[in-house]
Image (tube, rainbow, N blue to C red):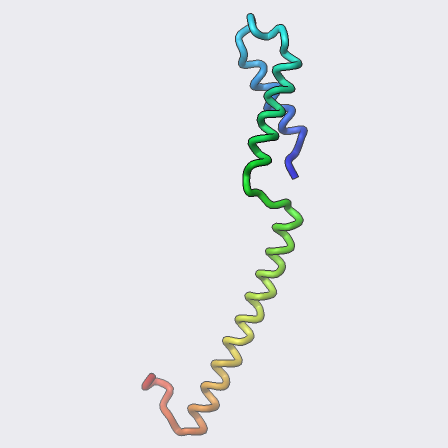
Length: 91
């Protein structure tokens, strides 16, 4: 989720950059900056921290499963080589 406090701060900073002659409508200008920033950020293809953490956990579990499968395959290949008398170094 977008931190609205940071958006408020950024909008305030932008409104402070406006020349003094235009600062009469400072509150309105600051609100417009905030709206534009929210709309722009809303168009980005972002995920929430919660969604990111869920996908990270899924990736870690998947990585563990792949490593387990790799070890199993290596063990089975070694057993097969030993059973057939094949030299694994010839592959």
